[in-house]
Image 1 (cartoon, rainbow, N blue to C red):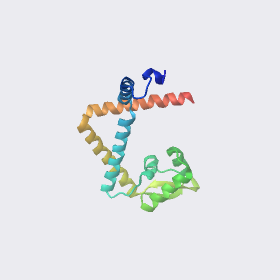
Image 2 (cartoon, rainbow, N blue to C red):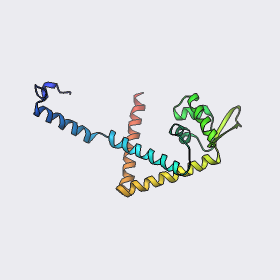
Image 3 (cartoon, helix red, strand yellow):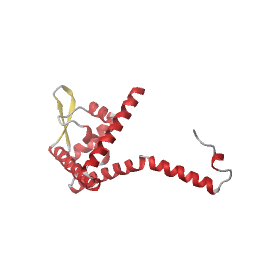
Image 4 (tube, rainbow, N blue to C red):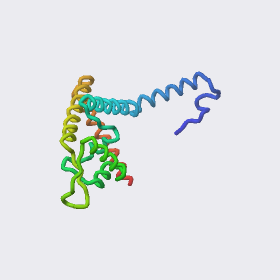
Length: 173
């Protein structure tokens, strides 16, 4: 239940009221997951980008939806866009960019002659291998900071929380 302003003192500048509010803020920050999780996610993304640049890859952040959702055996634009939660137009633009850079190729879809099959090129497959190596390097750096067991536990707890929240969200629909 929200407290009324009068619960913290009657006048602005009241030291007792300010102290109470500071305690409330401190407690909220102590329990908040936003800052540490957002910071870790940002650090992880930045390390991936730096690792890709160091390996001479030119992939842009907006193109990561293609890289992370494109099946190795290839797939059509509509399925890829749906899988990434994007519009076909937006996905088509990312595919055009990656094709121009040589990371993906389009070919005739053997199941539907009117549609194109989008697949990783040799350069795209090399990118995936490099991404795997970079993620391993980041994992090892994080494990050196908090220990392999703690990192494994952190991952398991974060994944469990994610799954439970997703299940609750799906049940609400």
